[in-house]
Image (cartoon, rainbow, N blue to C red; front, side, top):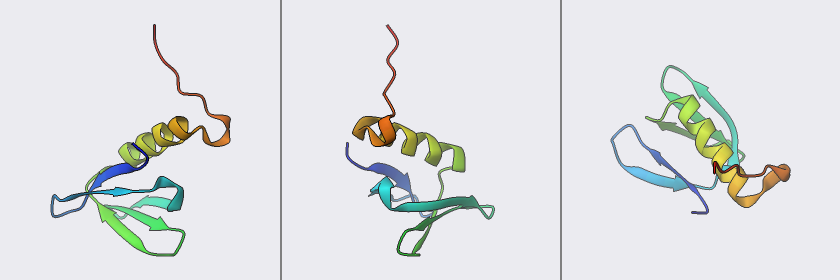
Length: 71
């Protein structure tokens, strides 16, 4: 997967390239601000978005993050 999957407030899922995320906040709904200043409101919690972004970065090896595997 080259993108992360998120859920809109209406329950519909969509995929987003995590590289375009500038900021993630809770207002109390999770609001994602993109680099183009567009805002997306999602059902996913801030923690869930952060986990998905971290996993995405590990998969594409951004900033030298290595995906860890348990043996």
